[in-house]
Image (spheres, rainbow, N blue to C red):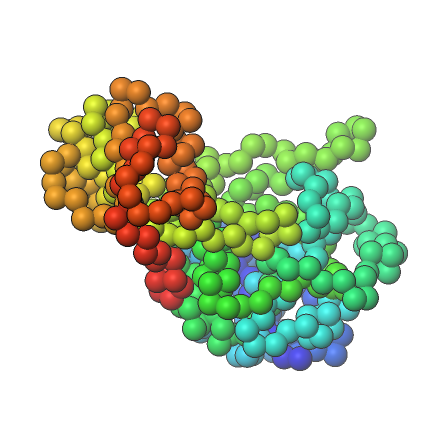
Length: 398
């Protein structure tokens, strides 16, 4: 198998070196092209190392974002896939992953067009457990990584015929399937929610997801912008991230979450094994009287159009427009404007409470499960359903 591994990285050189060594050690008979994007690393010599590796390894390719700010993996994944990778098969592969022996054999066994294959992650217990991964503490940093322990456990962990249906990194795919839908959506740059968005679009486009339990990576987890300071171990051996999420990550995650809501109309959803769940996308208009600036900010992402009696809503537009790719002047209208949405929700800001907000957050599924054309009450909300057209399939291709 010829495969290109796609690895953006920023100030992550020690993980990148560790990952590179594992790939070359455990790639087997496969021809593996390693494609790295240095995202304006300015602390650890990542680009100098990349230049050195390109001289030494003909199947190591690298590009660099020269700054002055980061582009993020949302953009750089696609540049590597479309402009650098020469293989028909690619794999999104994080810089903090160790490729286990036999992993690429397991991918080759399952991968075909219209299919995406994910390797099973083995992780230290830095995050809650889940049925889609294995928690095993073989180290929280490359300098303490216990390779012998991991390799000893691998045969016990492998399941010769087990597959499940889900998707997460590392995921291998045919480049043609990726390009057919346009790759990652740049509205989520530099990061956050770009993965759920593209997984939803793959799912709607008929892609089959396979997680193989014959192939593994050991994953240090979240060593990019989210937990930039890495992990630590207390005297009792318990492991923790050194600090909370970075301000940079928290700010971008909030922005990307609001963009995801505007695009899809719901929070990120998946089953226990990480298979996407995509509720219908309806054309919803929210009509709110006695509106406040806080209610406008909370409700605007949840609909196609919001009609408000808040006279100074332009102040919200001015503050929020730089944070979104959506044109807010098309989304926010005066209360008395003509209303052409196919579903209308009437809200009184004086009585609006948390229970009603939960109805708004789950409105797609509520309408899908019990909605019919007509006018009816949902708690204190008044709904008028004119038509039940859905538009999620319009979001598949960029």
